[in-house]
Figure (spheres, rainbow, N blue to C red):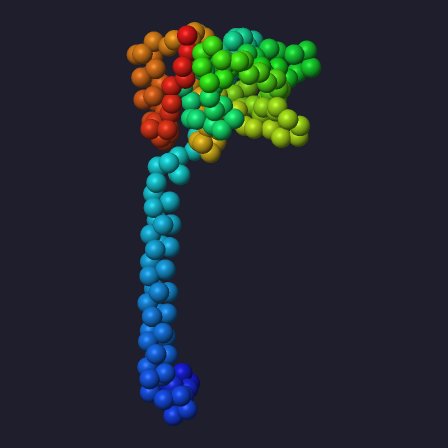
Length: 205
């Protein structure tokens, strides 16, 4: 009622043209609010029902770090800025006598014969995770989550990711992985909710 009275007295003061414009804006504001609410509800429902967002990433139950140590070749990964131009990428893990894992990553820049890039860091095991969850540190004090989500019984391959699923590495003890084994890994990754279209094979020799 108050709004109608304001419009009535406003019409006497400002004229019908201005008041029609005000009425139109009030109606449009109501429609915009309704559309915004509908869109918001739709987005929330999509997030709730999306398998990608609702599926919690699981690690393997247990990792024997002595068997996990050694050299790994990167077979495929989600491309990352810090690995841009990398070929023949490898990771080498060594158990230290201080309780952490020494991490040494290498790759050849821009070609298989390119200049070698090298970085050394440390990995710390999260307690009560069966050694399947670690935090890797290359620059103090920053640490990144390193979750082992798939692992061969004979430790011939491993798959590493992050709980947000934005990082993914498929590792092998050899530079070339058997295609059947690779396809089986992809099948399990798809079941875990990973977007395989983002996965890029690493050039190895």
